[in-house]
Image: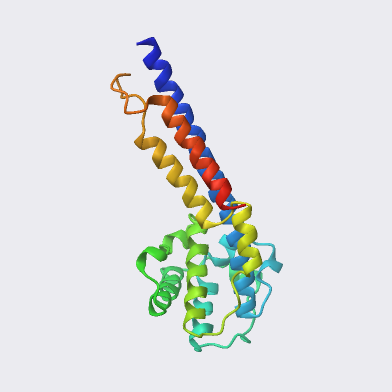
Length: 221
């Protein structure tokens, strides 16, 4: 029973380590995609959004930038429109206007062929709760526009994409690490009573995580 408790504690430790690795991977991916998204929006709207000293989450929060982005691509508004001031971007809008503008952007994404699983939720923007998901949607929109022959800035160059993969900052890298964590969970070593170890036990589970890590590293060299 003492050995079972040690096995259980070891499994928890490995899961915690793998979970931390996934968290770090998502942070790296978010940092990379936020930089690309900011650059893409600045090119599309013809203004330096980052000049106001606000993070991307704050720039997007009240929905104004996303709505204009959709309107510019659709030809409903000119990129030469008056640039946003810091006051514009920080404005706390009344009622549901922010959500309505974000929904306008999401509906435009759907019109360009994006599926629901590729879209963020409006609250991800208005509460600044999931910038990574927002950036992934913007990237998907840029790719869809390119496929449809709609002229928008390049989201990322081939060189940037290769570098992101090499440094494990891409969506693919994050997904690989998430799958490694799922593999570990499926190969759970001990049940709640410290009994009934699954096939392979803690040693095999540890090897699975190590192997997944090696695969992830090899993919992004």
